[in-house]
Image (cartoon, rainbow, N blue to C red; front, top):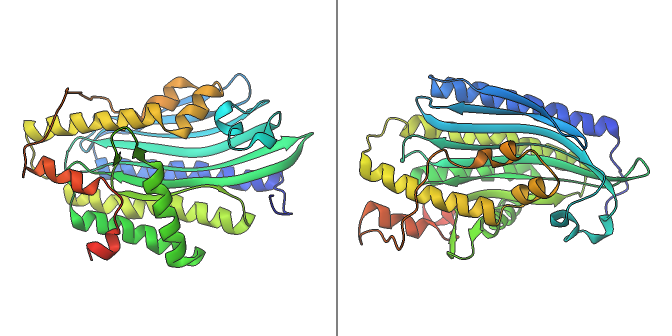
Length: 311
């Protein structure tokens, strides 16, 4: 059961204001970090209700493609991907607001990254009957550096400190490892981070945690941009990057809940699929040469206690 505090329109407006501002701030920071391209905005509306603004930066100095979208959408019927877990909400109207991003750098030594923060409420007869927060961020390196993985997870742990500290970090790190798993490959999508969903214990506290995750993304990622953006690379590294991007496509099209929810609820296809890389390659039966830098990645594609092992 959800708590006695049932969110009203003013609560939802506060969440929405934070998310639009978050999109603005991340765009400004990434444009500065890239130094060669700017985001182009595509505003759109949804026939059933709501709309959003999709922003895309392409062919920059650092980023081959960086997409970040804000959406505020509503509907009269929840799609199967939502009611499967919450059958009691079948028939309820709903409204969802969120910011989601995926950045694909040019340089194979700079990881691909994803972040998302979102809020959802379900209503009957104009009254909120359920609400929750979700989100997180994760990192997908192709040529991993231990210091980068440590920085990423130290930042994640630090932002969890006011919300349960180590216990919160461990729980949401584990959730991330379990969620971003390519089951048919038996490998994680990357080195993880944080993931949470259906957080509805205390509105103010849960909203504060969502804000911390959203704000913490730039603290986690921008230092990696500065470290790796100018690392020399050649055709070999580029080909491996494109091959590994194929795994990203596999996950997003087969397992990602946001993709399924968006498509099943009649969402805007272009905005939903902006997470896919601009270039990718597949190769049948590929296996990296034993002992090569490419083979080293496999050891990072499994759940590990990064802060305990790499300190």
